[in-house]
Image (cartoon, rainbow, N blue to C red; front, side):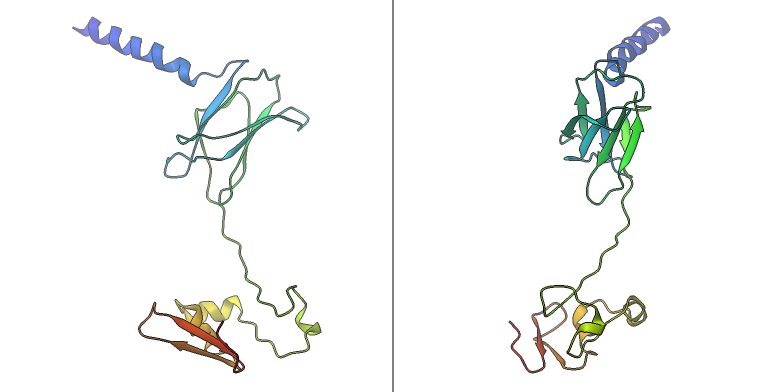
Length: 175
């Protein structure tokens, strides 16, 4: 009975292990997020030691990728996807699953009347800047609540929170 169990475990190991092996003619792996869920459509690039691109592919629905390329010592794999931090690993890959960390959100919104961002010192009209500190201090869940404090802006909400909200600037139309 014990011998049967050992034979079965050995057979499973021998049949599964080659799927994760990296050899000189093939580089493969799977890309996952911090929760170990597969990341599909991530850009995976195989780079030569000098940084030149040798091949490029996208991960499939299960987050898997494969390069059928021979790679000399010093090659690396770079993985990129919007919303995640770029990761670069030397080949052969140390493990079959490559985890990408979520990138910090660094976003700002600029509203202009000129279709171009212009320094506030060069704008000929009255402007109001709502700083990050003001937004944090007010702890408002809705942008409309922040805009109610802007001179010349009238915010009208038709009903409860989540209903249609209109913004009128200096008596203008909401559309």
